[in-house]
Length: 535
Image (cartoon, rainbow, N blue to C red; front, side):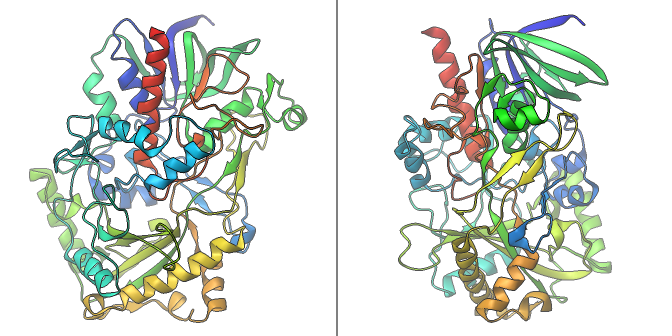
């Protein structure tokens, strides 16, 4: 088995990996190789925004992980979809462009992570962005990632916003601007009626670069070391075991579930646990895989049979979809340009909270079991999640087999305060949906949640139904203490030539969706790497 050689080897072509590959390959004398376990992003279900609803049922381009049984969810296993395709989860997500609150990044800096305060990271958000509204002190134009308002929003999304105003919340036209709090429409990563993933932003325009090599169907089995220096990686490519060596660095960007898995398989982690699995220890780093946390989410679903312009399975609903397919194929406009979770909000569970601690996602259909269950008729849904949960879990190995799924334990609702806040959010969400702007349409909350009225009943409903809203972070935490995995330059503690660059490095989850922050992390990391070359 002969080894090929590259300057930078990026493991994982998700949001961070794509951004790294695009930026680092701008240096024409630098060769960059990007490995992705999944497939090319060629499916129409990826590029058509509403295709995400079908992908949820087919598993296309999705690892489709499950958690271990969750004590906080009555012993249920949770669902953990992750993109297995160029673009990673940015190719299968709801395309919401949200950065979190400025206080989130200031908190990272307060923990000792120099250079990660809001004023430090804002330039990288702006550098990444091409916002079709135009540039200002908060937004960029000319960047690779296209951001825009929804082209054809559903009228009931505006009704939800109006109901939020009636419930006492301010209207917010820009959740990523001066203030986050309020209700409004989400901006989305779309362009010209299509999903605009990280692969479209950072890879597609640069496929002609001779210094950029992209390998799909390339399953990384381990990082290779000489002593404590990373010198490459081993991977399965179309059934053959191959190796690539690096002249400079290995950049691990496999995401919050698989970056720690690869480190552990490579001998970086808790030495005792690795030895029990027969994995040779390269470096004892006990924090690898710890600090997993995610936004647990509860949903209220409403039946509204007369609202046939909502997404739904019925004769007229199928007719609308067929017309929408024809319009999208011809003009890239119309019904199928929806991201389904069109509107939402960031609110405080009580006035004493300094910043929003809850987030809503309003969905223009009846969403049950992550959209994996077909529900007949028409209706709408609303999600609520606690933005900064206290519960912490882990990612560990079930064996030394690199092809085995990791053991994923988010420990959902393991901390009572998370459940208490979610109950408050559930009540607030119900209050919003009861306001005149929504109530006039005659929607009826489905019995499974409608019967939950007392605090104990709502707690029981949440424990029986809640699950992830797909924002796992923190398993290769950035920091300077003994439990941290990477430093503020994202280098793995105690190892040379290896960085982790993705959502796993977040010390604490941001108060919002995680795709835009992950791209920002990669933009900042690419800048640090290039500055290091020139020193």
